[in-house]
Image (cartoon, rainbow over the protein chains, first blue to last red):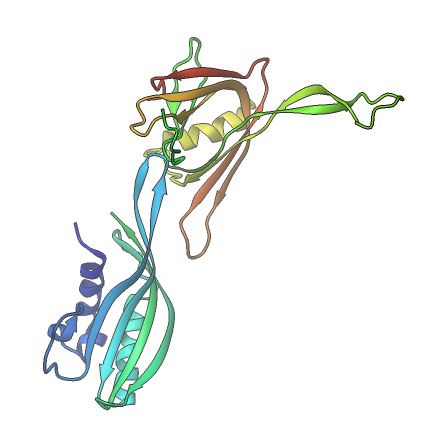
Length: 127
Length: 155
C-alpha cells in the first residue's frame, strides 16, 4: 500500500514542470540531508484527521495539512518551482488521493540566504 | 460490567423488513443519536395550600433515530445506504434495532427495538471534506422495547 508521501512523490517526480527545475533525486521527505543542491523540495504530512466509525477506522485518512517546502537560491526560481508544484498537485483526483491546494507563503532564511516557499495542501487518502 | 465508564464507539444499527426479523446492519456509522422516550407533561396543580406545581406524565414521544454515515452512494458497495432511500420512497414502516455495547470487549450489548419509517435521507458533499449521509427515522409502532444485555443480533 502506498503511503501519502509516496503518492505525493510519484506525482511530483512525474511532472516535467517540476523536474525541469528540480530533479527527482532532490525531492525528499525530512532527513539528515547534507549538501543538497538548490533548488530542492522537502514534503511531509503535518496534521492527520482519522475517520473513525462505530465499526472501527474507515479506509480514509484526511490530512488537513500536508506541507511541501521549496528551497531555492533566489526568489524567482523558487516561485517558479512552487507554482509548478501547485499545478502538479492541486486538483489531483487519483484512486489513492484527492488533493486541494490551501495556500502558500514565502520565508527568507537569513542564516543560509535561502528562499523558502511553504505550500500547504489538503489531502484525502484512500487506504 | 463497565462501572469505570465506556466509550460510545461500537454502536450498531440494523433494520428488518422481514417477518420474523432478520437484521441488516448499517455500516460506516459516524454518529448515532439514539432514540429514547420523552413523555409530555400534563399539569395537575390544584388550588390548595401546597406551594408545588404537579405534573402527570402524558403521551410518550419516541425521539428520532438520527444517523450520520460515511457516505457510499454506490449501491454496488453499500446496498444498505441504497435500501434506506428505497424504504423512504416507498413510505414503508420497518423494524429497527439499535445495539449499544455494555462491556469493553463488546461481547454484550443493550438493544432497543421499535418500528419506524425513514424520514430523512440527505447526502452531504462538501467541497473539501468527506461525503456524509444523514438519515433519520421516525417512530411508527406500538412498542419501544429495551432488552437485557446480550449478544448482538445484527450481522
